[in-house]
Image (cartoon, rainbow, N blue to C red; front, side, top):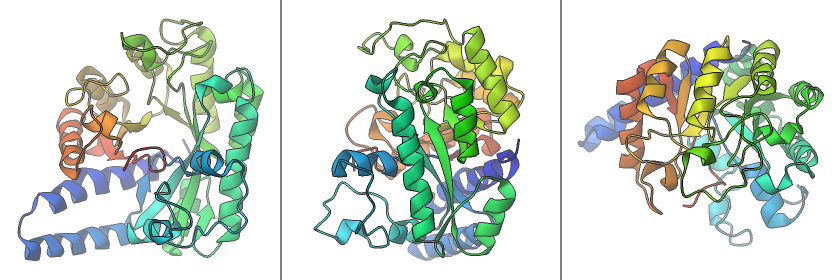
Length: 336
């Protein structure tokens, strides 16, 4: 797989080692010393954030995909003209020492069989135009080598992930086209089933998501999708899928999988989170859980803290292993 080795090393090294050690220290002197160690690590190995919903947030709040006069190079949290809903900009990405950002092309389930493909294309277009607009600060990459070069040049590597298998319109050709445009992972479902894969809604007795389809995991076409993702060199993302879909994907895939924005179900009983038995399978698969900053995933409530994030990181580290935990914050798709 083109991206896998370097991508997994960067996520696991920083999230699995640096962050918990830094935040557990109480002495301000020792904390600053540890943060210096982390900064030095991040100068050598890029921190890769697995999930950001900026492209969809732009469309939702502006009603279009226009980038004209959008001040992405300013700290939008201090810009009263744009409001507090923006959680991502170049200033804060650089302050957070983010080495690589996966931008999610998210499409709501209501768009399935309607304009899901178009909405996905428009968000990929946003990412590509952003990188063209700020070439000295952010760069579109599609391989691990390109990611390494961007980090070496002091530029944020920019990658695309497709959130929700309904975005491909049940078409292998569309999937291959997204790959040619730069997509390097696909989340097999969002919160609704597709004709070929079950979402986590089937595991949630309180879910009101539409259930027109039921594959009892992955259908034969769904398994073919996983094999095609492997062939293309795209990561198989299992956030939002049912437990049966997770296990079917493990049985089919020839490459490590990811959960681009999930957490530990043992600490928060959300159907979007990962059970311990799946975490143990993940260590055999070589995959990665990128811990979400969404309070719904961390504390199963409207509020969560950094200590909740640390608890999930440490639980996944203990259960799956230090090499299988990363960060997938979900900024611009979560509450503050």
